[in-house]
Image (cartoon, rainbow, N blue to C red; front, side):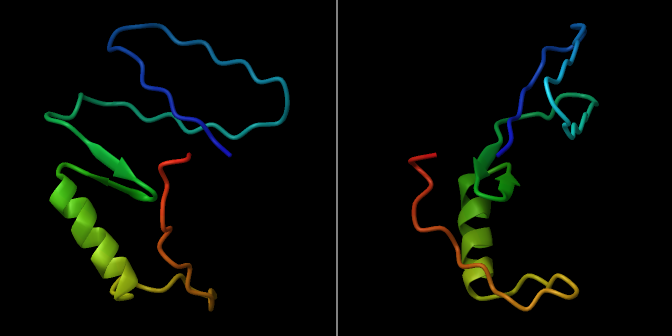
Amino acid sequence: AGSMAVFDQGKSVQLRATRASRVMLLGGAPLEGPRYIWWNYVASSQAMIEQAKADWVGQKFGQVPGETEFIPLPEDLSSR
């Protein structure tokens, strides 16, 4: 399980972990417009998310080298 936090531009941030952790820090200019997030997808429109879902179901994404199992699209993520 993981978490994501977004910080305001120009603010200082201090991280502290109570156990062994992995942290990814991304930075840069703020993206213009809204972002839509669903499962493993982030897009600038809901239509792009829906297209990604259809492409996943149609197995149009490339395979991960060495992986043989297809992970089905989640039915409902609203409980997360």
